[in-house]
Length: 370
Length: 254
Image (cartoon, rainbow over all chains, first blue to last red; front, top):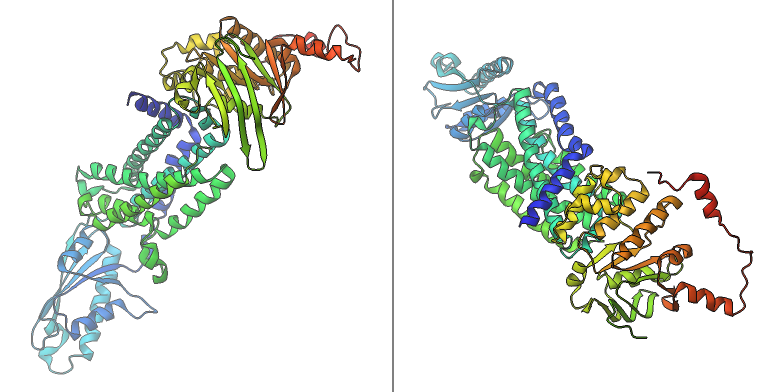
């Protein structure tokens, strides 16, 4: 144990003296995050709207379809959910407005009031949404409920508006946990691969094997170091990202840091194991680098790090939702943006656990000392 | 040939790699306090032999015994009492020399003063230097320092001066002689004959995995001369090595 601690401290010293590693672990993801964060891609999409449909009749379904617009010209990005889901999405900034369709919507002779709640921080989106809603209800009732004056729009449908200030973080809130997850992948994979492959090809591991202790203690110290780096890096990225891009973390919940630490360690364990498998197999840096890139590059773009998976075609998301980095990024996002507790992240934790098991089995089979 | 209380015993060692026989029935014994050299061209089987003795490789057959311990039975116990300098030595680029020595002392559970060990190889002034910044000769001396942390019964040096300039080579020779004077048993491999002549009490000449001669350097030379051998060139009082050292000085360049 004492030896393990001493070896971990030595590994930490080695790590923090390596400026290149520090650059890739901290400054590079930070830079990407700030660049993308400042570019702010929020304005490019049609506004997200959550709809709770209590009526569930032809009229309400017709209303929802109209809000969506046709396939070729999407008007609003509508998602339908329960009242609670819809309000939560608004609260956590995933949508710009929540529309609640009352039970008596479309029932002849009754006055139905649509309740629309806006996120007051997004004035522009509010204008778009309320204009669309006005036009759509108008058009709808001209078609569906022709005739008598008591059935005319102004007499049968009302729209009430209210505002909340969402904790929503928009694209920036999306980006920070995504980049933090990506950085965990890069650190776990690349620093493990490059240090171990270099130690292997230079003969450092051989020399360690000539000692009575062997190289396994040393390896344990090295891996512990990477795990510590992964956690520190997550803190730095989330804190600096939150401060510079003006995003609140975890809805102010203090336990969020504990949850983040656990999730970062899980993600770290996963990608360190993948790194071990690659470095166990590869003989030198020339073969290790392409393999590590082949593993990490697709995930960087297919795991919803920079943009939501929802903007990708369905045939991509059908399988990319099962990628290791997708589980990690989703989990990080739930904790940092939505303020979810780690105990509520069932599918993400399960996905990570399965991948960790697979990676460790492969790593132990692939690892060679020389 | 049986030696009283030998420190190293190799008996009929054999090692086959796929289609080549690297070690083909090698036997010898090394006395306590002796400097024993293995000479031979590249690929003759020197390194494989030494690595079997160090517990780094298993022999296919035969016995290797260090200080009474059978290497195959308890490689860990052997590793604990030997000092090892591998042919390809590398340490951690981002650690200071004193930190490297301290790290290895821990791996041998040895209590030592890293600076004292470094001073034995003339590197105490570089104790805060990073490994990456050392010259070739300094790296080699550091690897000898690391091999000394556990006060080894036997010191194995695999080509300790390959790739060094003449000044650094002489420095390593002086170091090996000093360690030997302090009573350590040393086994080294080399393909420099003047190195073997300078350092070794006895040498084994290896070719194709077999020992083809084993004696003191003087005896081997005498045996050759008795056959009526005449060197192609008349031996002069000085060599080109001496000329080089006389011109460039004996001081180290690092």
